[in-house]
Amino acid sequence: MPSNTTPPVPVLPLISAAELADLLKAPGDTDVLVLDCRFSLTNPLGGEQAYAQGHIPGAIYAHLDSDLSGPKTGQNGRHPLPTHGGFQATLRRWGVRRTTRVVAYDDSGGMFAARAWWMLRWAGHEAVQVLDGSWVAWRALHNADPALAPVTTETGSRTPSDIVLSLHADHVVSTQQVLDSLVYATPEIHLLDARAPDRFRGENETLDPVGGHIPGAVNRFFQLNLGPEGAFKPADQLRSEFTALLGRHPLDTVVHQCGSGVTACHNLLAMEVAGLHGTRLYAGSWSAWCADPDRPVARGA
Image (cartoon, rainbow, N blue to C red; front, side):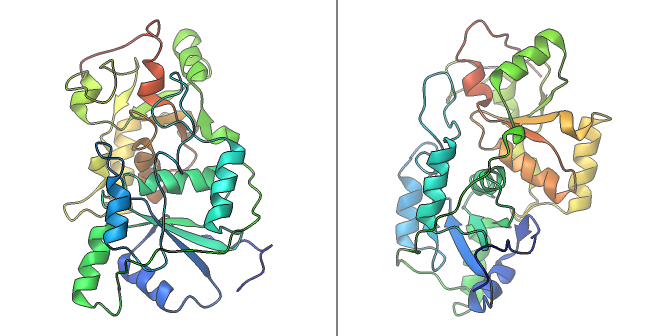
């Protein structure tokens, strides 16, 4: 295993099922951690139940509510970010070291795995990838060759680590910063809302008490990042689509949001795949914004 003080070689944002299978079969000098991020917003126990029924060998389950979110206050959204100490304790429990290459997957096209991917990068850990095509791609490879892509019900475990995090505070935008941008137009922020178009318009809202969107936001439903087979679209296509949507806005003014800061990470990931770097996350997103009735709300397309 490589030195625990030397970070791993930089990796691409996505990894295919075949590439992951080869990596797990012969990891060589690479310390690999697989995170199972399957989750259901309507059934918080569903992901753990799916994990128990079968997962990639060695994978550790990462729960959206308890591992990838912090305590809720009623003002910070449905999936607030954990504290520095809280997330550091989670990564230590998972056995993440500076040398560890982390691969996250779910069964939702990367919807929840992208949250883990973004959080690890926010924590200063760059060697993290999302399984392209998610659990569906691994199962397809398993059905074709069970020996190459095995499935197990054995709970994954690792030796705890003593990793020390250095959070990138500038990767996150606060509610106050978004409000100041609207009121004073400085610093300049251009919001990209990852929710479904109907929720963006303020229709069929079932997760938050208020329907609508933050004034000035532009809608980019995260599912548009995926092709018909459930894998991410090619980088050139994603770049063309995001460039057309954002126009001449500098990338460092682009801030992603959604309902609670989860699917927004999918758009962040897609832009990284496209080679469009430097965008940020409004982690509280709509659920934090609408918690205060005095904040402005827009409806319609």
